[in-house]
Image 1 (cartoon, rainbow, N blue to C red):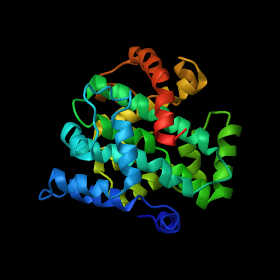
Image 2: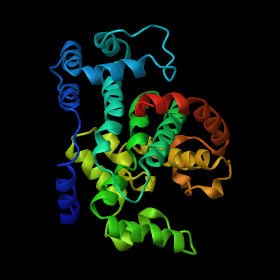
Image 3: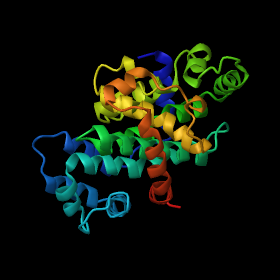
Length: 284
């Protein structure tokens, strides 16, 4: 790993951490000897995590026909992988409240992140049979590296933002970061996910969400997040014109089997969900 990235992560990890219950849950899901009861027991030890998990599971976002009133029921109905994804989604926003920065409105950051998560989940319904909630979380966390850079390297990060604004060729953020800082937010975000032992699919989606052609594993999931990132930008700008969003690479359409016809219905779907999702994940 780049020594500078390692140093930055060491500093940031002193400020933020995932709940102990999630860390233990993550370990248990990857342990073939653990049971559903073991996983439910760990979650119920954290009252706040339990409340958030049940709130999301019973929300309109899921539209389940049965009420989920206990963590054990959530594990049974949703499965351990999906419960892990939901637990991470409900923990992430809270965890990153600990690293405010001077360069970006946290409200705007999480608005884009939640929109990307919803777009990714909507797209996944069209081209993935499994791991749909994992893709939702990947969309939610795809830009966490930006928070690390803005907090740890504010002056260099400001230079990258100014370079993007001043560029006649519409320089993209990750390109400016590599030129000025030496690495980009996708690299540091994926390294943070790796240091937290988050699932490999999540690490890949964060690492390559700007360039899905570089992904060697979880390629469809990465392509979904790549497309979702651009559609989220369109939602924010209230337009369907792709020229106003980050370019979607052809390989992403090829990997997912989707095409531009999916953009309009995805935007329409996400616009109906954003209020509920914002309230669930941000508590407002």
